[in-house]
Length: 124
Image (cartoon, rainbow, N blue to C red; front, side, top):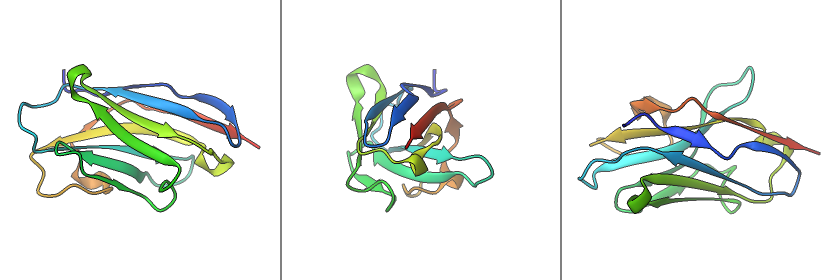
């Protein structure tokens, strides 16, 4: 089952925390890239964080220092820990994956598999 399935979204007040989860089978090779993206109404989808099969991570400027991406390969699960949430973090959050990519970055165009999304709403 390659299709990512997200969970963990919800409504929180500014300053609060949420942890998103994404279940998706991984290839036996470590040459893969998984990431979190978000899209607010009327805006383009933007990258939040990525992680490779080797454990290398990268973050968008808006997420760096507040969000942490991690993975549990034994559980085939990707996580996004979000702290110090702000109203501008409100969006639909998507998990995405690509196997044997030429490179791994927070560019939605390189990802092949997408989840249905989970809504995050942060109130002031």
